Length: 355
Image 1 (spheres, helix red, strand yellow):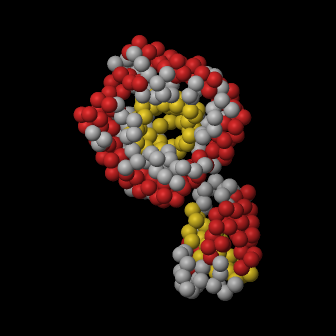
Image 2 (cartoon, helix red, strand yellow; image 1 turned 60 degrees about the horizontal axis):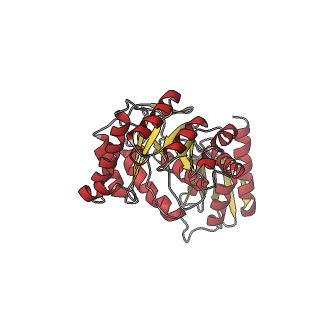
Image 3 (cartoon, rainbow, N blue to C red; image 1 turned 30 degrees about the vertical axis):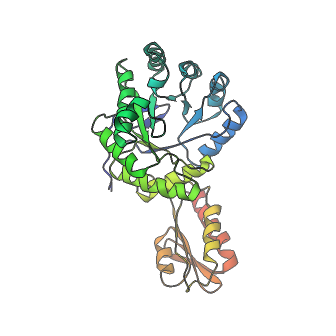
């Protein structure tokens, strides 16, 4: 059942990934390697692929980085997006190198003639352009008129959109990012009334792993709950792989995507007679490689534990130094506490192997 009706955005294709319309909300990240270091960048992208990343963006600060893109693209399986600022030549080289998408703001790459050059190259290869407006880098004239407000984000985006539409280019997606959750929400609401291009969403500069995850979850849930969002990034001051984990947890919790385990574990309390925190962390780590959408319960006592574990695909429920192992409501055995995780992981992996 879909609890979150989607905004009717137009659909575009970025490499093999469709964005917008009623396609699933896709998850992306950005590398933090030096793009000129091809081996390091490819290695990081492969790690991102392994945890479910569906689109990846790389910084392109100079010509050497731009000319590395074709070699990077040959080694990866997901669409590659070049992040361009100010220099239209880097955009042109990136297109020549075969990237699947560009992230740039046409208003800051120079004259109308330069915009036409980039648009012509993208049109020929059907390469989408993501207009990326950020609350920290708005144009001076926009700030003078609107201040640092949601309206300023929208006006900046509309100005960039007009530059592309004037060239009859409409393979566009848009992001309006701020570190302020409510400003971001308001900006997307306003722009949704003006255009039907797909939205890339996120709360920029959200913070470190825990704080950023909380802030991103709040902001993204509000946006997704209103149907605003076709692709997203969770922006964390952390390893890019952590962004993918948080993104899928947000989408799973809203019933929008299913990938990997859903871990159900109770809070600790005075009734707990096993090392519940340790058990839950061990299970989460040991099953991080599982991609199938399975519900796993790690429960600490007899009050809610057995019931929750029975409703999960697999679960353990603790007692005093021991625990019960469940599979879809069936008790498989009673084991010492130090054997529970190993037994649970074995059951899950055996199940995945034959399904």
